[in-house]
Image (tube, rainbow, N blue to C red):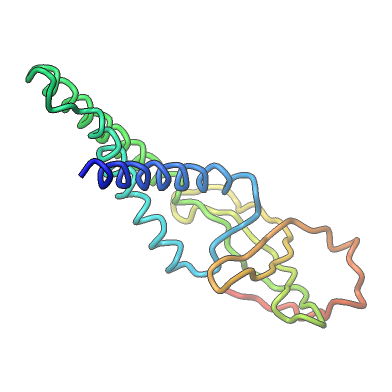
Length: 170
């Protein structure tokens, strides 16, 4: 039974590190979900999973051989820690209202049509009173679910490798 709890603890720590690491790396690398449904599922699992994993991971620190008041105190702290994790996740929902969207495709690679140069805009929908921010990116599908989207300067590209298509995606 101890082995089972160690495995559960190890998996919960791994998932916690993965979800926190993905959130941090997402701000520094141009990797995005290509499929909005996959993104929604990932965020939904992370939203409900982090508080549960914090709860499960902290349960390991309860020792049934301790006095009752120590167990009660640790249990209350664990519930508060899981509740705090949930509160952080609820607050993070407000940051998710704004997102980058592709609104125009300018160029398509002649050798690989799945690589495109696109214009993206960052807006918050009805919660935003300002104009959107724009950037030009080179979109390269990594898988059906992930796309690599670094910024690119269209003045420096070799026009021999690109076909101009200028398509509005909205």
